[in-house]
Length: 362
Image 1 (cartoon, helix red, strand yellow):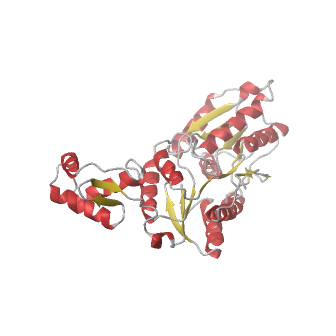
Image 2 (image 1 turned 30 degrees about the vertical axis):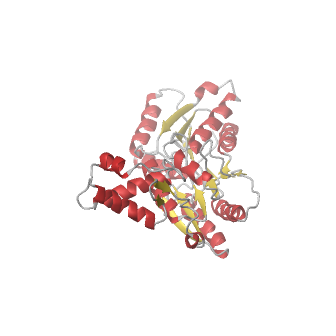
Image 3 (image 1 turned 90 degrees about the vertical axis):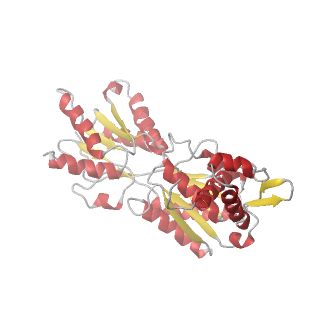
């Protein structure tokens, strides 16, 4: 155990995390002091000190002659319930489209007398778990959550099941986890990407590269929409190229894969690139321009999300819109309705094509 932290505090935190994640469920009998002594290789005094703090924090109760039990920790302290806080967890906070979403949520819930507790995961499942455990201790009135690596991450479903079991209102934004059942606000990623690809077909493009982030459901759905569009055109359906990447991949590696593929095509070179989002598209344009490419004369580039900067770069970026502020307002209203025990329905938004200068007909 780390020398700079008292042993009893480390043990207390581990037991508390097991309670918060429902490994030890409400009403369960805890292992005995002797069991904990053996598990952690510490003295009885150290175990008792850890348990005493959990008792004081209303997580554990002792029954004389009958052991230690998990209290209904989420309801025992009414003062905590009256704090009127809503936990908001997103993959990012300070950049890209997220300030618009978060500010809109905050405006709606603050007008209703709630304050926002904000956390971000950097799309890292471990950070997601740490944030969920930390916020569970604070007993927020409700949750608004953007899933982390939603296409592949199943590491933290136990904590989402715990939130569900505690009957705390919660909604997902941008994507969702299977089997949890929280209402969700998201864009029609598959349909909109299919429409975008068909638009490119309508102005003469045939050999398109689709670049998609596949550890988020949004990216998987956009990739499906790209494939759907080609399936509707069997005469040139074999001319699509898909490049997949993960959120942990370095952009330079992705750009190298794109340019190497392009250079290796001696005939029938790609004429357009659809990017997973505007962030990737803007970085790709910068990279290609540094190599001497002209956009869109050499190749058209399209993004997704209509990021604020997209209208100011050169050339301005053709993209699909994202409801950003509207999603934030709707998420705030939805969570307030759930707090008031009102019925709600999931919301799907339909992005619109924003035509600018990074695409040209051929």
